Image (cartoon, rainbow, N blue to C red; front, side, top):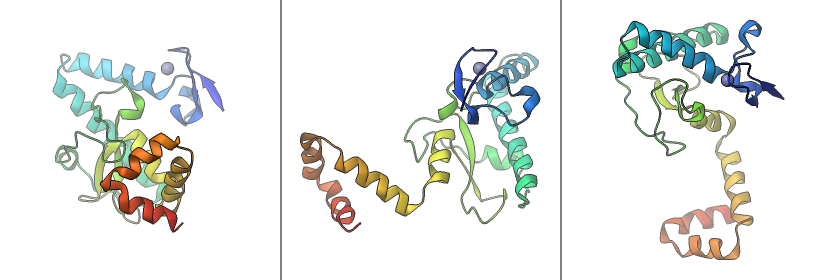
Length: 177
Ligand SMILES: [Zn+2]
């Protein structure tokens, strides 16, 4: 379902709005941007103020989520300061440590072992989009996606990949499924 943001006037997926109904009319990007601006004003607009803000938001979100999901939480800002991923290991794109820029590429907190909570050593910063993909896929579904893509490639594109030695074992694997 698409909802229209009253701030940027863009129609976006429901997932891009916060769950709280009172503020649902503004998309997350606009809300974070507003919060970030007010935070930056307080911190004289420094880059580190932005980074600090993003960590703080991640921490607060994790805290709220851990309550909702009833999982352990013992993270501190220092734990997040130690995670310095520049590139999302899933999307391969740079992670943006600024709020309200490109929502899909913005930083999000991933629990490495989903059976454990938001605890020291069990979190990684990946892009929002990467997190979305990870949480909706496991190995079997990822293989189905790859197979589907491979089956629908043009013969030229497929040939190009098949000639690339790096993908040799991947195509052998896909044939098994
Ligand atoms: Zn908006």
